[in-house]
Amino acid sequence: MSVNQQLDQRMAFMRFDHRSRAALKAAKPMVDGEIQAALDSFYDQVRAYPEVRELFASRAQMDAAQARQGDHWRKLASAEFGPDYAAGVQRVGQAHVRAGLEPRWYIGGYALVAEHLIRAVLAKRTKGGLFGGKGEGEIADQVVALLKATFLDMDLAISSYLDILQEERERMAAERQAAEQRQAAAVAAVGQALSRLAAGDLSARVDGALSPEFLSLKADFDHAAAALADTVKAVERATSGIRSGVDGIAHAADDLAQRTEHQAATLEETAAAVEQLTATVERTAKSAKAVSAQVSEAAADAQRSGAIVTRAAEAMTQIETSSAKVSQILGVIDEIAFQTNLLALNAGVEAARAGDAGRGFAVVAQEVRALAQRSADAAKEIKTLIADSSRQVGEGVDLVGQTNQALRGIVQKVGVIDALVDEIAASANEQASALGQVNVAVNQLDQVTQRNTAMVQQSTEATRALRVEAADLASHVSGFRTGPASGDNAVHQARERVATFARSGR
Image (cartoon, rainbow, N blue to C red; front, side):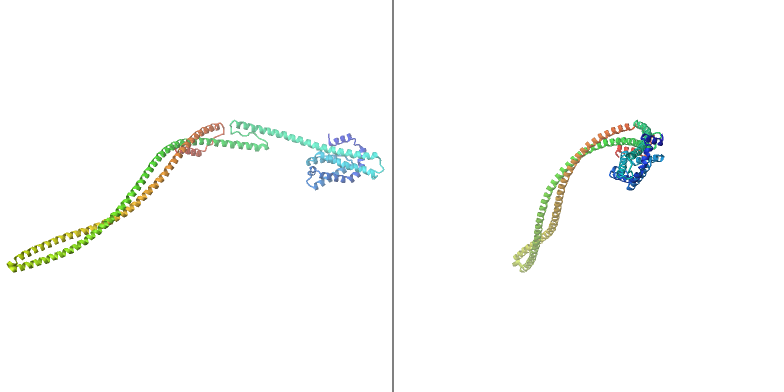
């Protein structure tokens, strides 16, 4: 059924006949005069409600809508319900749909405008103006015609609004159905790829052509699957490297454990040796103290010996002086003997001259001469002995002086030795103290080494557990199919070298 036919049907049902049209045309002058005031009152009400006011972007847009509504009401009052009118009402309904104006608001608008116009008709009748002298039947016809025109226009606008909404619903339903079909196809394709992925086939991709809105999903899935495949490949390579490295670490840990145990034993021996060395150094320090005491006593004895030697040298000097004096006395004795010998010789000569009378005196002179000769000989021998004694005393003085110098050197050297022995004793004490600290440090190091040994054993156990976990991870990863393998020889060789290094410990 066409729009005009629907319009005729509605008007027939409302009994909107020629009489009603004539009554509506008769009310047109009143409508033309009052519609502006009616719409002003209506839009004042619109501005009072934010829900309706917010549908207009600006006051100018609201004024434009009011002007179009005024033209529409004036055309409605002309009672010309042809195709142009129907098209205009349809445009109004479309505008309401686009603006989002719900029917409840413009039904209220129709009520407010109709109220104003009906009150205006009745007011004119009361004042005897335009309708003055006319009967109540004619006024009733005009009011009824206004109401029928209002309801007809409202019916057509709402029907247009509902038709447009229905078309929109059907369009949206069709689009929704098409979208659901496209979505179902995309879900099916992704589901198949996910099933393959869940089965361990990481080469799975979304097959088939998808609608444009799902192309990003397809690309994301394919990219994620490719990234997952690359990750699993990397995990495979890393797992291989981990297993190799863990094996190397395990061998290295075992070797380290053995070395640590050997080191612990060596440290125990070192601790014992250091302890013995400490005891030896302590004994050396005590011996050095004793030697220092003996050296001090020897230095004192050497000093006393030096003093004695000095006194002996002085005595030797005095002896030498006395020997010189004795030599002088012996010279006098020798001179006396020489004079006595001369006197005896003279006496013998005189006795010989005297003859027999002087024979006794000659004997005495001879004895005196012999005595003088013996005195001279004895003095000569004594002089020789004194000369030898003086020489020996001089040599003794020299020797005593040298001995004194030697004793002074000995005393000095003994002092140096005493100082050195004191330094040795102090150094020995310091070494003993340092060795004591070293002994403590070695004992602590021994304890640390023992703990390290325990930690190495724990690390060895952890490495063994890691080896089992790596093997388990490798078995799980091997269940994935990632497509053609692409190994990196350089990385593989590097891992092999690292594993070899870890196993050899070099």
